[in-house]
Image (cartoon, rainbow, N blue to C red):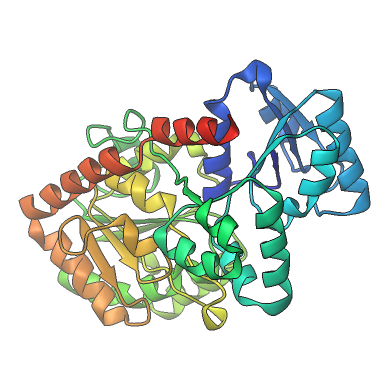
Length: 370
């Protein structure tokens, strides 16, 4: 596995890649990845070998190409997975010369803009022709990426989406400790938004919608869990809207504590949006699937493949992320719905169980590698 997206860094791709690694035979797996804070302690807990490059971000340079080829040769790796096909898939030719006979490139949201931009479009086409298979996480991503590829590479694309562990994420967990730590009463309605704090996720629109929610439910609390460069602006926006008393920012929540975080909520809402003229989109959104598996109705923004995580009106709602009044309306309707909202959450869990199984993802990857 060659990747920049690996824990202890946090994010959907990191969780996805880590889950795939966990299901591969540890004695057969070598991960070559970049350096990051806290890596030594994390790597020491893993049953497989992790090799950290000195760089904080791996790029397909000559030095990295030589280092990756050396890993392949030294550990006799005959199969390679690129945690994100672009740009590290540009190393495919060098790794074949080093002994790799099967190569798989995982694609996510950023390959969509590679497919739409002239220079990177040609590079992505070259990557797809060098590897044996490109995968996709959502039908939206497949439709967006496929036109940039040769006909043979298009026909070889395979869906490989994140899976959700239904034992970890389930409705019967107790979120009382999370509520106590956030100073939220057991009776208060809680809406959760958990994601990296970046503009694409739509936290600002959720904050703009929040006054209308608290107008209907004065004791409602919004939990915003995540870290990122947008944190200061979001806190400032909450103060300017005079809603900071009903908003809690939870930073540094470990991935291991995410199930309890979902258990503390009544509704999950993250109105993600498309930015930069359609080049920056939400590829899928594993947090929507984790929330659904936890039995929560979900409010998702209409961006990229994110709407594929819900059945609109049955397991949650797809909203226009640019209209705070619509976001508020859907949240209020779910907080008011009682048993119907609970039924929507359970329907979402059943859908995750049927379509986003971690075991299925592992089977697909093994088949592609074999």
